[in-house]
Image (cartoon, rainbow, N blue to C red; front, top):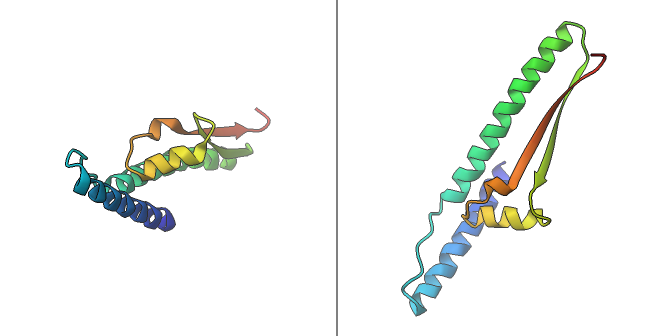
Length: 110
């Protein structure tokens, strides 16, 4: 996660630099928040960890009852280019709705 934060910070700084450079030519370019991509990534990660921890708790409870279970996470992107969505997210655009995770709690012998 720390690598993602460093990458998001670098990309944000590059975006800010590019836009400031563009403002020298055209004053109509809006500013960019440096922290926005980092906040979005942290919120996304926190949400994923919360859902996974709840499913892990269910899984442990069922395992204690003698039922074998498994928690699985399937990550997907709505468009065909997942790297494009991640680049857009790191650039400060709101594209989290394109990135999704499907969690499965598989219960054996049910």
